[in-house]
Image 1 (spheres, helix red, strand yellow):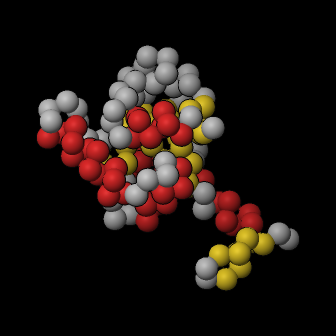
Image 2: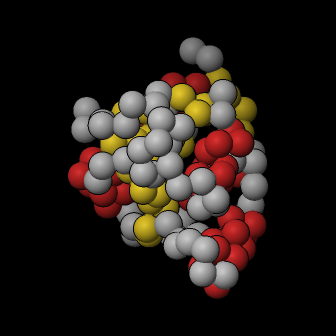
Image 3: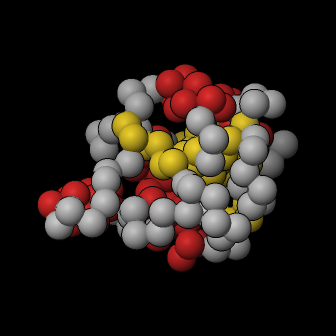
Length: 137
């Protein structure tokens, strides 16, 4: 069995992959892959639509949630405080809104599954057939 070496010891690769934080969207979203730059722009609330023009509804976990920190660092290549500054900027300038916050991954799943154009992130173990994984280039 392949092992992935981590700071706290070795973990089977299959378990490590289950802990991946994936970009997920509502099943009605027709875009199936995004670049890192487009994903970052959507999560920073600078881009308000999917590439096909559909309104994007962004959902995030609290800044203190470890899954939020992992997603932001690993997938967006920024730090949570940098993303928060971007949200504060659009809110205080009156040019936009902050993303919708949910408290748990279960809540994230429910909101994404029930909101047209929704985008968020989940660990693989929380996925079901009501949402789709969006690949990132």
